[in-house]
Each structure stands twice: as structure tokens, then as C-alpha cells.
Amino acid sequence: MALSTAILSSSIGANRSQLSRGRHGRGWFGRSLLGLLLASVLLLGAGAPAAAAMDYAKQVLIGADFRGADLQAVTFNLTNLRDADFHGADLRNASLFGAKLQDADLGEADLRDATLDSAVFDGTDLRNARLDDAFAFNTKFSNVLIEGADFTNVPLRGDALKTLCAIASGTNPSSGRATRDTLGCG
Image 1 (cartoon, rainbow, N blue to C red):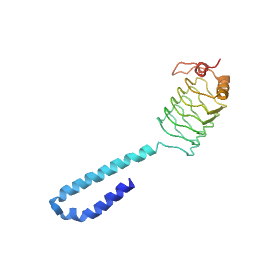
Image 2: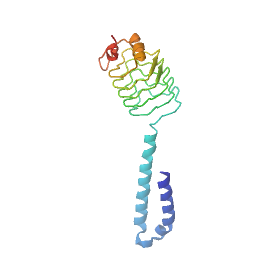
Image 3: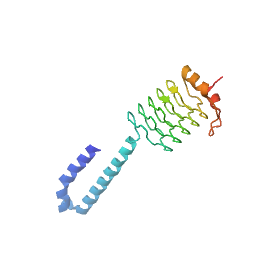
Image 4: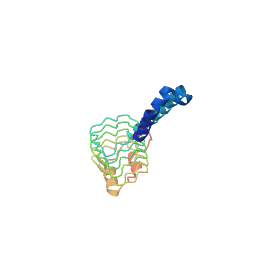
């Protein structure tokens, strides 16, 4: 955007005298065309930062409030999210690779198809969360609350599965599946 703004600025400077004098017999037309071009550049450039704002990778967002937010496909890779509130948030297809989620509230959050690999869930509230088809193979789970969480089709390491099966209880109110069944606990 900086390059297009610089080109537009030099073009405006070079053509300002021509347009004000009405050279080439197109005074008002030239100004209208230039205004249209400037409006297009500004409108197109205004959309770019919004997409970039959805990448929270490598940030420190301790205690951040994302309660009930639509965070589909947002990136939180390697982000410190300790004490963050994601209660009821829509995190479908989000990437939380390597995120630190100590004492975070993900209760009733929708984490379907999310990337949770290498994330740290320590003291994290996952009650009634949907994690169907999330990727969490190297995820660390300790002291978590998982009553009613749905882990359908979530690949987990054996030690993580053992930890979660020891505390699994409840039924997810959205999917109707029992937590123990979704984990494949015996």
C-alpha cells in the first residue's frame, strides 16, 4: 500500500498543474478520474489491515477478553494466552499451535478443526467445549476441566489420553456425546 500511495502522490504532484489549467481539454474529467483512482486506492488499502489484524501469532495477550468472539481461522501460534477468556468463542479452524493457555477459559468454545498441537493447557477450562477433529497430538493437558467436552476424532498421545480419561465426565450439550466416549476411554 505504501508503494501505491507513493506512486499516486507523485502522479498527483506531476499532474496537478495540468489538471488545474485544464490541459488536454480534460480539466473536470481528469479531476474526476483522479478522484476515482484515489478513492479506489484508499478503499482497497483499507481492507488489508483488517485481514492482518486476525493474526495474533507470537503475541502476549495475558488476560485478553475474547468471550463469545467470532475467531474462525484466526492464528494464535506461539501466543501467551494465560488467563484469557474465550468462553463461548467460535475458534473453528483456528490455529493455536504452541499457544500457552494456562488458566484460560475455553468453556463452551467451538474448537472444531482447530490446530492445538504443542499447546499448553494447564488449569484450562474446557467444559462443554467442542474439539471435534481438532489436531492436538503433542498438546499438554494438566489440571484441566473437561466435563462435557467433545473430543471426537482428536488425535492424542497416550499419556495425554490417560490423563484426560482419568477425569472425563459429562455429556456435551451441543453434540449429545459423552466425554468418555469421545475420548475412547475403556
